[in-house]
Amino acid sequence: MTLRQALVQARQRLSGSKDIEDPGLESEVLLRHILHFSRAQLYFDLNVKLNPDQESAFNQWVELRLGGEPLAYIINSREFYGLDFFVDHRVLIPRPETELLVEEAIRFCNSRSTSVLADIGTGSGAIAVSLAAHLPQTKIYAIDISAQALEVARLNSLRHGVTNRVTLLQGDLLAALKHPIDAIIANLPYVRTADWQTMPSAPFEPRQALDGGEKGLDQIFRLIDQLKGKVNPGGWALLEIGMGQAEAVTGYLNKLYPVASIEILKDLAGIERVVKLIL
Image (cartoon, rainbow, N blue to C red; front, side):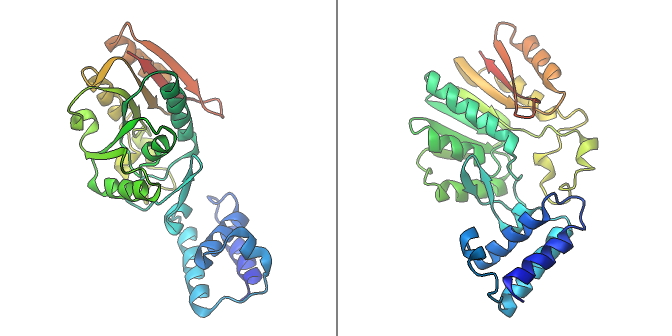
């Protein structure tokens, strides 16, 4: 089978899945990762033949994708904020909308003194590592309750050379912090349980990284409850939220921190995605 034939057949097969938006692109990505080729190398000569092992592996990967396995888990890779991260079933696949959280954190850190911040529920470490790559003067705690997730975060810290500034801590939300710090960044599970059950990726991604309870706010509210005493005076927090949750989250923050400054940021789709709290 030539590269051209492999791409055509895979595209035709993947086109039969309603959950795959771009079968052509995914076919290309799968084949490139099997061959360890760049895009230019792949298209240099499409008449090159796959060897039997490559053809077998490629067919297996296409079958996995048809079975609903997320592409990022198959190739163990996901780009986030311009960096390539290792991902597997131990961690949530980083989402593009979370880049707003990182972008705002970098902007805010550069506008005011932020020596130490913590990424809560770090998972793959995508947020913590991205921040460390852009904030060389800031120390970052990457906290997760899952030891398996922290192992993935460790791999990504090593991959991007930031282990000297990213400290991995295992613990439940803010419990691992022994002293107050300057800022909290958190992308906690905010999917409603009923919605999580219908997600195509539900059988593959860790439930504790997605399922936020009946209203999707269980872990976010628990974190808000813990902020006092964990953030220095004048410190701040950025919380990623889901569609339709801004009013409930800001209302709860106003109740507990009535003199704090609260702002809502929208993502590129116009969805209220990040709540910023300045204490």
